[in-house]
Image (cartoon, rainbow, N blue to C red; front, side, top):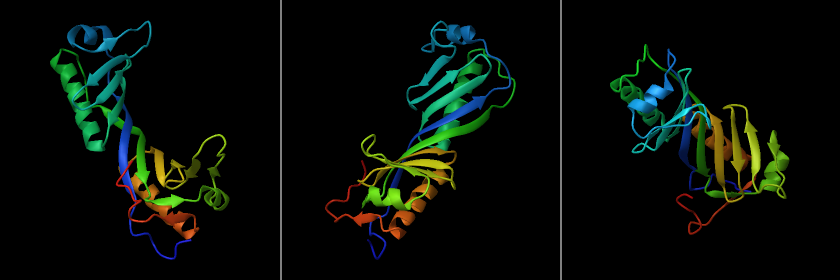
Length: 199
């Protein structure tokens, strides 16, 4: 058990933001396919049209209803920029968009490194709302209620965070679990030579 806070603080990285975009009118996906090169539309296989922004590494699934699912952005600013670029491309190619889009972040997936090792057996015993079955899966699954996220915690101190709706919730959740694990005596500080910058 640590008697003080470890010298190295957690590091966090956003891996993917998944958002839905609602346009105020229906779209003719056949017209988009005809007018815009390099989109993919095969309605026999999938009802949505696939629109990729290669430079931004963002993909949009566009549906006839005017709804889009956008994935691949690493931060909110890039997400908004990608949506603007997609809509601008549609308008420039003769597709009518009647009003402003509504963007809603559905899920932020992030990775983190606590830079300490975690005693998962002890954490499973002391933390509420967790699931730990090491013979099935090597990580501990912890459901945090505030912010409302799910954390996959590994003994190495590495984590995956899902379910956040804002970037600030990711940092808040990582700092919160880090402090909880220290208070519960579930962490072992690494020596400086063992501390990794990231994954």
